[in-house]
Length: 341
Image (tube, rainbow, N blue to C red):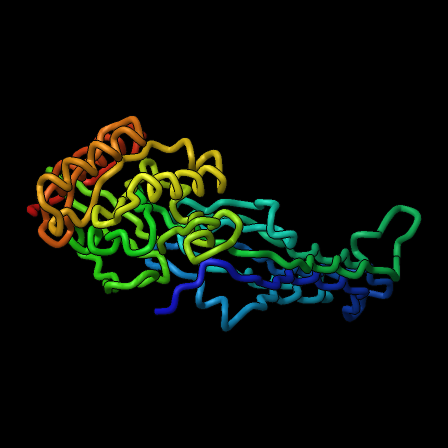
């Protein structure tokens, strides 16, 4: 399935049906009064968050959603039928933006959450509505109100409890594959990951969702590389796991590059709790690990975990710390079978 997290959609609600001009024409009734019914209301356009979707790719192939107009009123005081509503089924975590691509109309973060995007026009009044003591046979009726036409943007922000950050080829996908059932593409070259990946991670009989996004590079906050366009997917996370490639000879520079870019992207993202880990340590000897760990601790001012996704070492400690941070963020976690490294 192709991944798409931003798309433009054109919507229009239905117009109201016209009211009816009609008079009662029964046998033996010489002066039948007005009996024109009202027009039916036009269909509304809604967006609804549903489970089981994790991409907006369906909206690449269908971008126009138009509701039908209400039925016209009829004689014998019959009101026209209201048109059916049109519902856009979107993934949980979808933001709905106005045409300017900045104004947030709604943020659908729970399954079943629904928002009205375009209200259908009201049906027009039939001539029965205009009957009065001074006008016993009105010959007028209202047309229905027109529908609303607008352009909106759908932007998906995947909902995950923890997010993975790091330079390209820092071992993020290897880590996710080692601790979850996710199977992201893994290869020994930068930008192997081209789209976000989600994995369900279990530890100590509980589970949480982790997101892996394409690696960031220097200048990402200005639009360079791939990671910038996917940083929105970790904005909802309660905690970030920052992986630094232990085999790099510039680990402190690598660390500062990521911190600089996420802080430049968003204050919210920059203020999130972060856990720092030195990855790919299966390729290093103990002395090198110790030296690089101390250098990273000095640069970050906090503890540094030593892990290897390939050898599956140090993973349990990191996952327990992630779970502790998620609990501290008041995230509900589910009871599952314990994870074993």
